[in-house]
Image 1 (cartoon, helix red, strand yellow):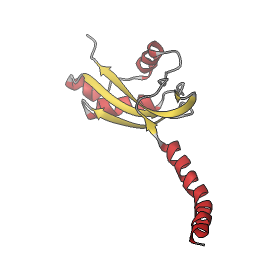
Image 2: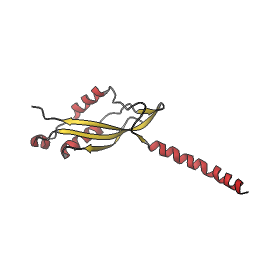
Image 3: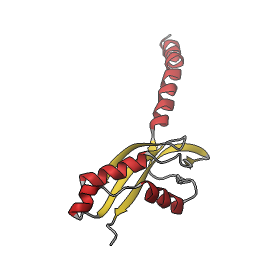
Image 4: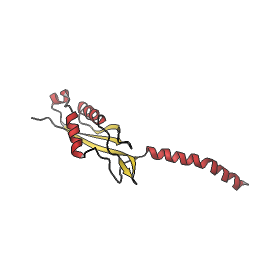
Length: 132
């Protein structure tokens, strides 16, 4: 009788456990994937986009602040960008401008695992240099 009750409990609760596992998998953000996410048109087009959208902050330019802002963000399964954050900043104005422009990016080609699109963490350095 105990085995029968245990078996029934397993049948009743196993779909709930399975459903929880599926939901958790949907939230996983991969760091390493079989196929990396890619900006439509490749790295050259990415830097063209950044160059066209970026505006050097006046305060930072006046202070002569230059450097590399390192951002991380998630490329979602649909190619959209989310969770943009500064990993290594230079100056609050440069950091803010880098985040603003990354949030403007069009959809990427998403990363893949086993042929399926997945969420992937992407690191992007953006160099701010005052031209002479």
